[in-house]
Image (tube, rainbow, N blue to C red; front, side, top):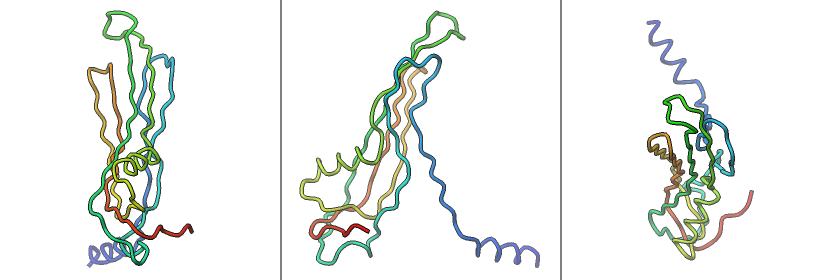
Length: 143
């Protein structure tokens, strides 16, 4: 019986969303860092697209940050110098969607993924991938 009480309590609790934004990691002594990463955003659902809009199907865009690190000696525990650059944020990913799908009015049912690639701890790339469904027609109203 206790399990049923716990289950009912757990199911009645609100679901909280916690953003986990990330910047491409740097290590050692950072010489240069000019990178931007995703934060958090709420996106439209199918019910919120303006009346009279036409669905154009799946759309996708991405933007990436890059990081380079160089050891200062041949030791395994050598100090490093590193640098990072790139815009791996939502704004750039959506700009890439607008570039790849001319005439698009908006995107709904958006899904976000982060893809992190590490090559021998010398090069790293962190990309935000935005996928959703696009529409053309009336533009959404600003709230």
